[in-house]
Length: 110
Image (cartoon, rainbow, N blue to C red; front, side):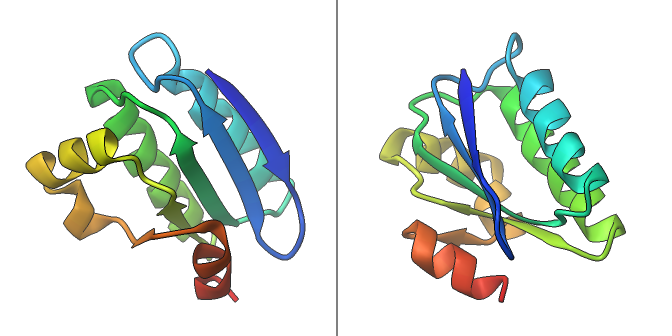
């Protein structure tokens, strides 16, 4: 898994590769680094993620909780059909804000 970051008023973490039991902690650590630096409005761009495991779902829930606890938020964008299906089956699509693209996600965070 690779993560690239764009920092501005809203921080975008563009994730590429699988989010699974071997990589989910890296995603949490990267988000934590950003939040510790005061970047608490996060967009996770998952347009290059083809697989997400239960560990990946834990990462999404953890990052969202930590962002909200710091007065921010986390939203998703660019969800691939395969990842969307996992989110729908698990009900995460009802718990997470999902936008079709990066621009809409960033606009939602101000």
